[in-house]
Length: 622
Figure (cartoon, rainbow, N blue to C red):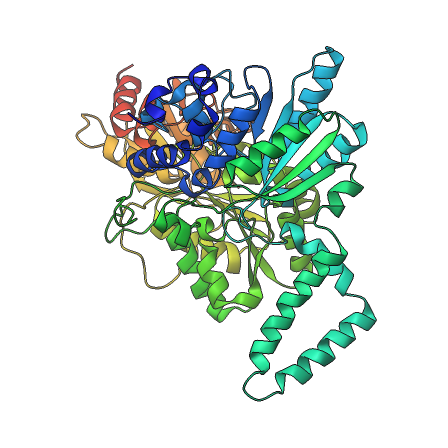
C-alpha cells in the first residue's frame, strides 16, 4: 500500500510522519498524470508544484489558515490532499470537481480563481478581515512569475506592503506562465546595467570580443553569464519586494521539501508582509511535459506512454483557421500587427510571430495594456489584430471603450473561446462578449457560422472596415467545411438567408448554426433560417421585413441572453414598433455555466441539436 492510499482526507494527511510526506510526490504525480491523460487539464503547472503543495499542507493548517492559488491551474495536488482524492477521477467532468479552486466545491478552496493576478488582492482582504475580527490565522497567496506581469498583482503588492499586515506571498518562479514569459520578474535588474557609460563600455567590449577568431562567440556567451551574475551580486533579487515593505526569502528550491518546510517554520512567527521566492520546474516528473511545458500547460486527452494528444484528422480548429488567415493577409499587407496577452500558442499567433517576429507582440498577462497599445499602433498607421480569449478580454473593457471606441480606431479583436468552452468551466466560458461589446458606439461585432466564414470575416475586418471590429469564434474544431482558396468580402452589416420558409423564422448567431442545421432535419413544417453574421450593425432592412412577415420567431445564440443578439433584435422591434408576432423566443444562456464537455453543457442549456429541434417543434405547434 502506498502513502497516498492511506490518505482519505486532510486529517489523514496531517497524521503522517515527516518521513512519509517526503515519499508522496511521486505518488501524487502519478495520479495527476493518470487522470489528466483521460480527462484533459492543466498538467505541467500542477506537476511543477507538488513538493511545494505538500510542504505548505504540512507546515500550515488549512482548516484555519487560508490559501489562494493564483489562476488556480496548479491546484490539482492541493485538491487531491484536501478531501478530494476519491473524486479526483471526476476532474473537469460535468458534476465532478472543477479544474480550478471553487468556494462551492470545498471548504479548503478559500477563494475562487481562474483569471491571473487576483491572489494577493484576495489575501490582503483576508488579512484585513482577520485583524478586524481579532483572529490569528495565516493567509497565503501562491502566485506564478507570469501572473506578476498582471497589473492587479502590483497594485496588491503596493497596497498590502503599505498596510504592513501579516500575510505571505509565495512567488512560484518557473520562468514560464503559459508560454515563455514576457518581461520576466528579474528583468528589472537590467536597469543597473543600462547607464550610458556602462552601456557604451559593454558594446565596445562585445565588438572587440566578437572579432577574436574561433573563440569570440564562446567568450561572448561567458561574458553574458558573468554580466547576469554581476547584476545579481550588486542588486539582490528581492530588492524590489523589500522596497514594497515585504521581507524577502529566497530563492529556494521548490522541489526540496526539507528546504521548503524549514523556511516555512522560520517565517511562521513573523507578523509582517513576507515574500518567499521559490524556484520550480514546470512539468516536473513527466518527461514529455518537462520537454514541452507549453503544450502540456492545458491539454486534452493524451497517451501517457508517448505524450501524444488526440486529434481529429483533416479538420482544422477555428484558431488554426484564424492563424492561417492572418498570416496569408500579412504576407501582402505589412501594416498588419499581431498582439496577444501571454497566449501566443492558444490564440494561434505563435505561428504569426515565427513568420513576422518584428510585427508580433506578446505583452504578457496585460490585456488592458494590449488594447491601448494597439490603439497607439493604429494612430501610427498600422492595423493591429488583438487576439485574446473572450473571458480575458473582459478585463480590458474600459480600454476598449475609452481608448479605442471613443477615438473610433481600427483595431481588430479576434475573440477566441467565445461561447461554451467546456471543461475549464465557469471562469473561462466566453458568454458575455456580445453583451459587453455591442452596446459600445462605433464597435462592429461579427459572428461566423463556420470556419470558412471566419476566414472571410478576418479579411473583411482587416481590409474593408475602418471601425473597431470584434470577431467572436468558438474553441475547438470547425465543422469541416471546405475553405475557399481566395478571400471574399462579407457585405457590411448584412445577414445571410440560409433557407427560405414560411412557418417560423429562426435567426442563428455564430457557430451554433451547426446545431441549428442538424435540428431542422425532418421537420414537418418549413422554417426560414437566417445567419445573422453581424450583431452590430444589424441588417435592419432584412430583419424588419422578416419580423413583419413571421408570427413566430426564434433567436439562437451561444451567449448570455441579457444584452445579447436577441436583445438587440427586440430593441429593433421597439424602435420600429413591430410587435405583431405571436411568439418571440431567445434560446441562449441564462446564468453562469459549470464545467463539463461542450456537448453536455450545450444540451443542458437547450442548445444541442436535439433540444433545439424540440423547441422549434413546440414553437411551431404552439
